[in-house]
Length: 99
Image (cartoon, rainbow, N blue to C red; front, side, top):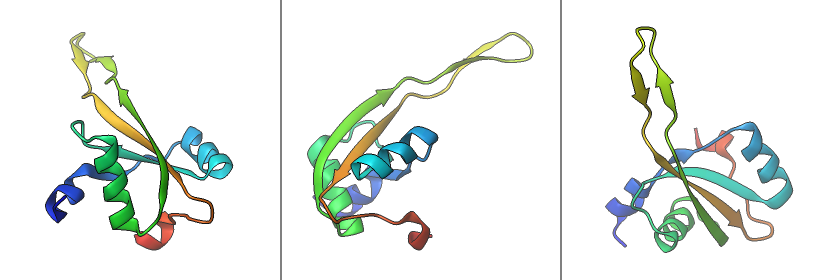
């Protein structure tokens, strides 16, 4: 896979209360990824960008929320894709050092 495609697959980390608990217990990291990305592409992109060994990739499509505006119109946020990355034992990604 070429370098340009690798850089367009991963949008950034998805940090929430749930992902913080998962990262502590299961050595997993969560990323927001491109909607057309596949598991092998995500695995290769993470391994090349962060220089870690990936054990497993789980992908989840997240439906955009429907919101009502103050004037009563219904708007919908975009659908997006989330990837749970399980790292090999002893591997970690520290987002504080990347900034």
